[in-house]
Length: 566
Image (tube, rainbow, N blue to C red):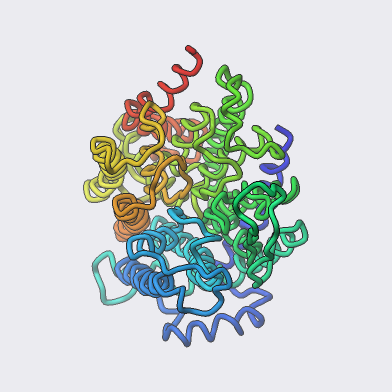
């Protein structure tokens, strides 16, 4: 409980000024450090051949987003498939098989970092530093860029471009500037600072391959063991701050080399939520509506506290905690509470990194983590979480308008059939994809590859696809997931969970921006109130329960009941 108060309190205290700074960066207004940052940014703009001051409609913005992802995806896949022949490979990592290379590239390209490989054994230093960390730096800022463009659209966009009459005429900003500015001015400086702190705590930061040592147990067949090292600290900094997840080592931050001390554990837990909290604060300064920021922050904080409290209770104080088997997969040096806190935050933020194996969590804690990912708007990923929150906001406004007999409108613009149809696509896509792939995989045992055919086996499969769709990346690691089926099916789910969820709200915002602005009146639905906040939270809970309650009952709920009945 003390760690929860310290971590969340620090995030709220530091998130407010960081959010204000982030808003200034995204507005592109003159700043004191322009001369310094410009020396880094201007060569990047010249290299890309773009004008950062040129506005884009939603089509140009989405096209630039998809193009950048396509190019990066091809480059990174090529690195993974040829790493054995490239330099900086002191541990002689082999080339990745094509399906594993594809899954890994799509996973990190979608800010998911779902790993079907063990990093220290299967990736070279070059692949980790370029393919993995490179994407961990830029993909969170892509999500931030898309949500900032969506916010511009909801409030009418920047100045409309003359001579055009369709939705693409609404100026939503410049994609390249919206990605490069926060990367250079916010994310990289934070990564450098956290990397230095983690190195101070003992996380490796070297290009050496690692020493060879003699095992203490002389009876084992292995005479020597190589301890894999590398530039671990910079990667951990990027994975935590960027809601990326993944890890240099297979066990992630449960590995002592990646998370060696209690202070390093607190630093990494705090880093999980710092930028997502800052984005919630950013909303008020960016839009000029502090009450709107209070709505976003209040809803997210309420859901976060409820989720975290349930996880801490389930893991440390529920009736199932008497089973000693639950400590399997946990670090005794960290304990159950620190493991549950990390598990709650990492699934609330779509981070996906772990300091304990989620496959070993109490069944109800597993239920909490799955619920967090299915909601995907309790803080959420950088940009992505707020984008999903805006989807829930639009749905809530539409439903509240119907219930009160008012025309649904948000910020002076009516929500009509075109916008509702696009919202319906987003609402239905998640259950169709997650439940569809779960059903197919469970129906064909040769595809499943799980370690437990009972209730927990259902949870393992559901968790994998829910994690992929939410772009979270954590997993119930009892699955044998390094197969063609898992790699290719998860790659499809990863893409379906990322691109529609970012682009369709942008289309909706551009459509709303074209509509005539109607000043607020006494008959306008007030969204920046506690009553509407409760309505929004109710919509989130009801949607999640209605769509996924049956499979959650068959999985974690049934497992919990079976454990306490023994």
